Length: 123
Image (cartoon, rainbow, N blue to C red; front, side, top):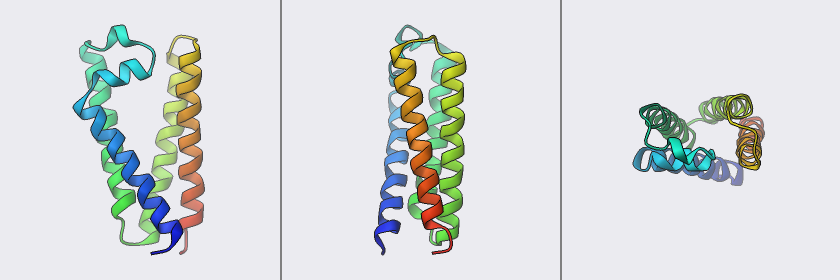
């Protein structure tokens, strides 16, 4: 296994672990987003579940893809998901330092996924 393959698989496992954490502790997403007062709301639990399932599935797809082309596609999806998360945070969260941090982290994760997808392509 090459260093690139190993790194992208670890990236996938980290993404899946985050997704699982949202499924096990749905209130944590509200705290991360700086809207802890909404943690118990049904809509917030729904969002946590949707993102948790999405991240778990895509993370496992990245980590377990047998072919580099499949891993690259899963990484491109990850980049798109996190780019959309960045845009949603900026559009819908109240202006705050927390919003800036969350959006920056999502943007960085998106950029890492995109770089990994490019590095993985055709290998």
